[in-house]
Image 1 (cartoon, helix red, strand yellow):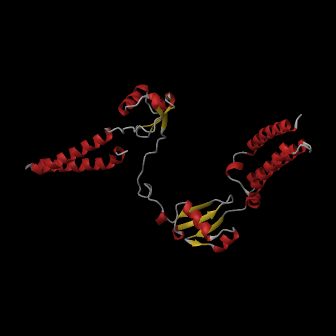
Image 2 (spheres, one colour):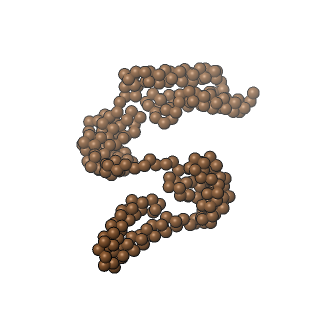
Image 3 (tube, rainbow, N blue to C red):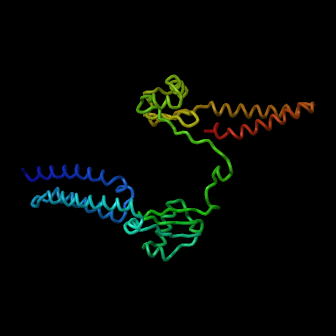
Amino acid sequence: MPDWLEVIVRTLAAVVFLFILTRLLGKRQISQLSFFEYITGITIGDLAATISLELDGHWYLGVISLAVWVAVSLCIEYLQMKSKKARGIIDSSGTVLIKDGKVMEDNLKKEKLSNEELLEQLRKKSVFKAAEVEFAVMEPNGEINVLLKKENLPLTPAMLGIKVAPEVEPQTVILDGVAMLEPLATIGKNMAWLNTELDKLGVSLDNVYLGQVDAYGGLYVDLYDDQIKVPQPQERAVLLANLKKCEADLEMYSLSTQDKQAKQMFEQSSKQLDKVIGSIKPLLKR
């Protein structure tokens, strides 16, 4: 067999073998590398290259070496799952870099991290002042996670004691100009509804690259032609305007009437409608 053909065959075989071994090692090998996994990844890649190009040696020895490395890696992962002590030795443990707004200089030196690098990692978490941080921890995989102090956390409905409905997953109902019937059925819609919504927007189904329905039943479409601007439906804006007009009419009636009972009724109705508008305004502005 010519050398060039043997290199091609060996490379293809190495790719297939590496794919099988990587699937055995699992996704963690890709997403969260520990020190040992980092070394294993480099070594396996180097062995695969050697198998592909080392024509003078015995290729099967490289395959054996690869198998041994993968077997050792699988044994290490098994130990990590079964023993906390083994996890501490192999992966080490997290290191606190900031506690109660105070940078732990000794821990920075231990992790060989400069203060500029720490500030850079904080900025990646949208934190620009170390004093706002309750805890900053460097995880075993090198990632830095940050917990802000309570007074610096973003305000949430839970903090205000407000219960909100769960967010419904948006459904993709059009892909590459083709209607997706299953997502439509999931949200209780059909093709007649979809065609009606497309007619409101003035677009045809075959011109839509992507179509999604949000949690409030609104249809968003992205067209193949990016130069065409899709008009936004105005039903919600019209409804909001009509509600405000009704509120204004009630206020006007309360000011114009001389009947005290009618004046009180109109004022109460106006206040009640104002509360309703305030509660549904975020939905009508979407």
